[in-house]
Length: 164
Image (cartoon, rainbow, N blue to C red; front, side, top):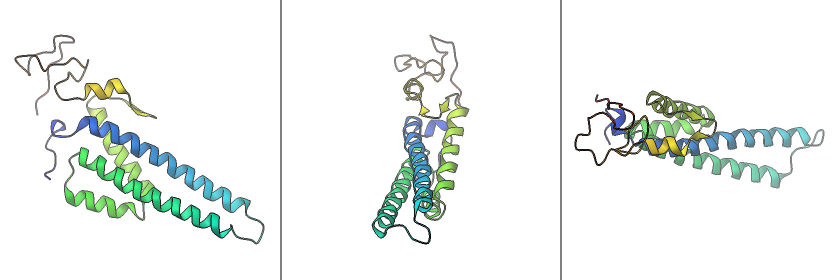
């Protein structure tokens, strides 16, 4: 798969959707670390955490890492990254999971911010995702599919599409 040449080549609604999954995984990572710290802190003095709890923690951790790799791959595919980049980021996900998730979220957020879409703590709003759909005005969300000239100014907000 070739690297995207412009923002128009990217799956912008897909980026917005997959950003939410990556953000949820970042929250899950923080919760998992907090749980691990609590288990160690609540362990009896000189004792260890019960083997069943430790095993359950590592099974959850493995599931989290696998979910992170899958969500990261979907986000990178939406950003139209090359296969080499996807493989490299997926390998880096194993030892540096949290940092890679933060980096991917930051990159996707920057792409959307350049296009004028706000991505907050809960990701991109539904109204902003609809504006990212192909054939829509990036400023007001007007459906431009019926217009004879796609490069004409938007009838709603007078925005002229940018061509790279």
